[in-house]
Length: 215
Image 1: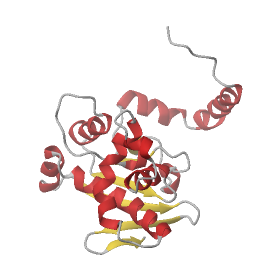
Image 2: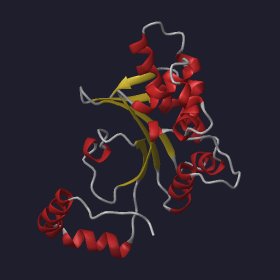
Image 3: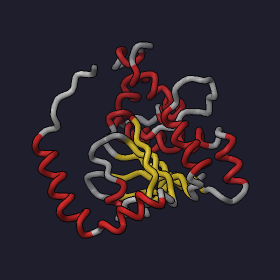
């Protein structure tokens, strides 16, 4: 049997508050979602970072976004090798089953996963280079992005550039999925890249051949 403990009391208190207010005020909507299933217009791939709250940024309602979160908002290359692929499975479900019209990759400032990739690539985090590191093997996806920004002399600028490369690499890897490119060619799907500055509340979108521009 797994070793678990009771839910922390503060979470239980918050749940009862939500049930008595938000849920009570919108019960028909929640029952509609339960009875009729989800029909999100977009898939969002964002970082696990607790400071990144995509639904708040866009004022999204429940049921509007199909959200997948992972370390450093990365998408791996298409690799149908019979192994476990959580991110790839989420993309397959979003495109094949939910028929989303958009996939939006959202990166952010001060990303710990991207910082880990930077430190690993510069030799300052040898523990991440070990094959036993789940984090290291995951952020290895971003190494091509590091190769594109390693010439930047200022370290702070280089780290920010690498955060944005995490978005670009993910967009590039999305187009290695045959069902993604098929949907794009058919005009049924579009890809988008965003980077948000947590402290400033800024939002930039990726424009091919131009880089990131303020929204």
